[in-house]
Image (cartoon, rainbow over all chains, first blue to last red):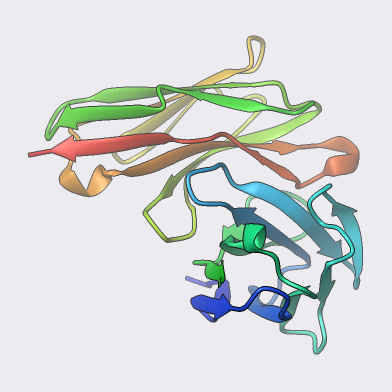
Length: 114
Length: 114
């Protein structure tokens, strides 16, 4: 069964450093998402991406965050200057066109900011 | 504001017993509702998907119900197994201009004891 692949599985970074979280969505999917889950809290929407541009973003997704699909297969989330409160699990998801039945999550990247 | 509320927050049952988890939502416009199972440190895995017109859907030992009028859903697990211990998350997918955007409940943590 097709999978959404995320790397790395765990990243530790110092406060103020830039991090890039990588995702390889399912190959024929067209819509891409980033979510995050702070430990003990619910999963929160960050951003959706379609046709090489952001289609919607949440209040969390401020100027420190950016997304990119650099080469047609990878989908990245960059955090420019990490803060302690950015520590969370970050999930990438993708879906196919037309309906939501092909919605698939990756296993997540655990980001720890120290 | 779109919200998804789940109850109970946590549940402990003995192996072999049945249980029912509840979900209330206020997401509008509604597209479909999913129940996910999330093991600790992993991405959510879809159990069932229900559209507006569906009242009941089963997937093995999991049976989900949906009442679109009252905006309530339930997930019934029969003959529980130790491997059912996880967080069960109700997720509602919006339609309209937010097409495909997920709103997550906080999850019910299920623990199955031998």
